[in-house]
Length: 281
Picture 1 (cartoon, rainbow, N blue to C red):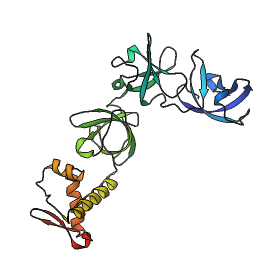
Picture 2: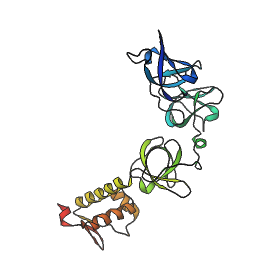
Picture 3: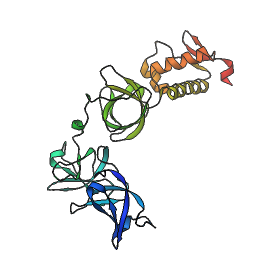
């Protein structure tokens, strides 16, 4: 079934001077304007398109990729404000409306805002809302598992770190102790499920566990080699010192030390850690 606000593969059923008509099943015949028709397309061919409404409220197709689809969150720029609401650039000819009733706070031309795309109940048109909280339900069941790669949208910062939207469906938390790079509001980034708590809430990481361990070991080795093979770091070193020097949490530091110690690549002394001769070369 073809859906407004989604992509679909549709069959060309007739050609006209101003484009081609596609069989959109429940939506009827939908026009793909001439400027979007791929070269050589003819009746019977299948075309992948995105479906939305034109300025007259009619279903229309485009081969242009929008910046977001219905059911997704996106960080979009405000390009106009009118008596009916604000309009956002979502990559298509017709801008995306955020009605006043769906604005968390008044939107201003030139700013970017994080919104959710949905179909309004009256006209069935693609509409956006900056009231993102009402589209994320922490109680909704999920099947995320530790180690799973996911897409994250950075939504806001907290005392603990950053809240992020996971795969356009759930909240998760990135803790400050696990983040050693600059993050910005609205940023889309690949992440991983670190831990699913008994209550279903989700802790996140920016690297999978194996890659993170290897990165931490490499970072520790590089630091030691650059400092003559010795670092005055140990169990009682302040976590902030370790983070500043090595770009990792104290827990990650201890795991890296343990791995290198077990491999006999470093020794643990009273005042720090020291590389063995083989790793100084």
